[in-house]
Image 1 (cartoon, rainbow, N blue to C red):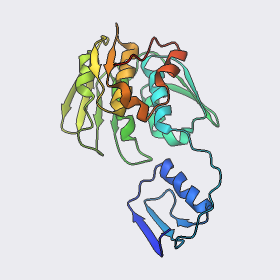
Image 2 (cartoon, rainbow, N blue to C red):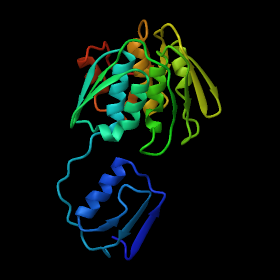
Image 3 (cartoon, rainbow, N blue to C red):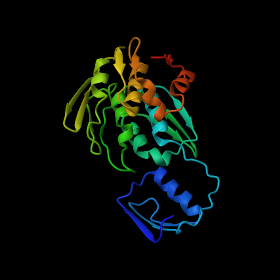
Image 4 (cartoon, rainbow, N blue to C red):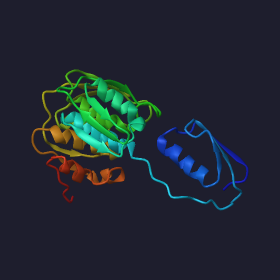
Length: 245
């Protein structure tokens, strides 16, 4: 709605940003550079926009989390209405760990094959590996046969989940922005605390394979990024329920 031209430099290139730009463009605004790090917008000088009905793209982090659920439990899971292109970096890392995939137009099926291989990953900007999948992959890496190395390059203090995963029996060591996830025979149920959205999902994933009951407090963090996670996992056979705190 501004007067003149606005240029956004170092813009995020995530699919969500691209779709927002497309929505504005379709409403009558001239937008250039969609999907790139430099976006130029020709203002409409407060002229009303004419928005149309749109279909929101699938949540790529939610889809990636369910793929991790299949990997960590050595189970086949099919995710419908998912865009594989948007989570290709996560699929690539799971394939490196030994998982197999069937990918159709809007459907992804993961087929784990036995014990997972260790993985090395570095978080970076899209289309690289997303920082919002780092915690989930750390949980998956606890079940690998060797040491995995995870480097967080986007945010500080992004390893708050490590101490809680270690409460469940994982063997994770930190040095600055790098985490080493060493193999363990199994995880054990314990009382743990979620510190943020993605840490919450990582603890849920670890709890799926832990021996015994895992109680996760402050699970309300999940609701910012997942719709009925416990219900969907329960429909797949998980013994999971939400209790009031």
